[in-house]
Image (cartoon, rainbow, N blue to C red):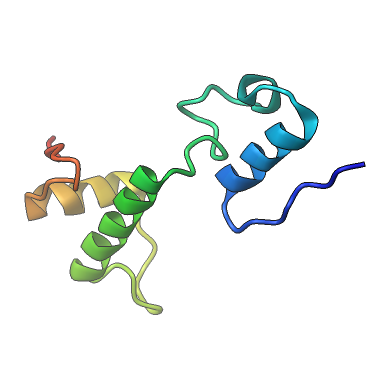
Length: 93
């Protein structure tokens, strides 16, 4: 019996499982491709995640003693900083 190789990313694990089982990504996914965290593990989304972390650090929200912030608050942090994502998408109200 073949075993899936252990990789670090969720997407890598799903793709390896696809190889081992011969099943499709759709058959192995629980959520829609646009919402499934295993399917969102891509180089492009990693780049957006790094950009997001940089924005939060620049705004002072990724410190150990920082207060909790609601997701809407994160949106307003980005809007007030007037930033664009690495893919050119402008963060707007």
